[in-house]
Length: 357
Ligand code: RAM
Image 1 (tube, rainbow, N blue to C red):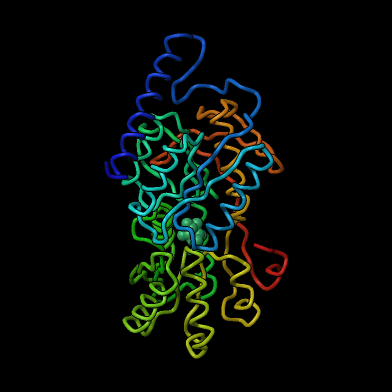
Image 2: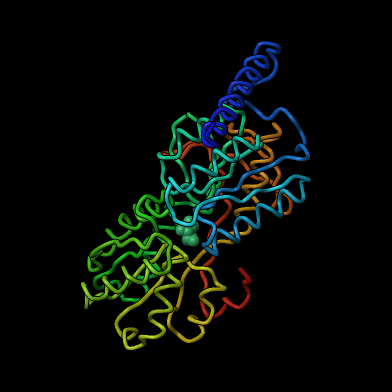
């Protein structure tokens, strides 16, 4: 029998066992709440939990820092994290990691969605096998199948609007601007871009000419950046709402300083990657949150959901170690139950040396 078939049989068996177990649990007790909006039933987190962290890819330094935060959380809780993903930002590259989590009988999956809907069937399979689903960084949009908690880095509208405001301030609210994004299917970038477009309405003299996609790959980001610069020689500003895009663009501008007389770059960046460009004047201001804290919060949320000490119910609270207590927000728009880490920080020459991520 081929390996694939053995694996498939194992998964089917595991799913059947999980379904029987959940039916038995539902039948044997009426006091245990099992629905997606069930209130928290336990007061502490179980030890020995395995949480699969599935980042957008395993090579993006931002995702690596976020996963380390998750490992820190599970270490504190007496559990462990398995980091698994592909090397390109596609849903297809993440699906084998979801299957691996199912086979390993993980307690929870924490995933950064490379696509809002393409991951839903696999995640549904995981949820049916009893695995709790948490999205972080980039949300999934699966309706109620499976239900999940989104750990949001910061208010979506605020991120989008503030990036436009930062650029407007630097270019006197005038001229052609462009966006250098990550993958075209990335939920987080697309949500922020939606709010950037709304905010741009406040600046009638700033014109968004195009959005290009570097797939969070430095080489692709550089290629699309060069294409952008040759197609729009009068471009005044670039917003790159991705740490990979902004660092690639900053590196390019650093070696093509003549462009700086006309072109301003801002967006979302890691202070560690951007420090030298701020010091030499290539970039003035950009923003971000602490990705390590994002992963840590997601780790606590996943462990809490798997233990029954956290729930998806609006207004319910759970403890996230040194970060303190967090409250689950009610679904709003296309976002289901979520938790927000906190407001982003704007970095510039005055504060950039204070940050180590
Ligand atoms: C990149 C990724 C990630 C995003 C950050 C700001 O590293 O696209 O999803 O949150 O940038």
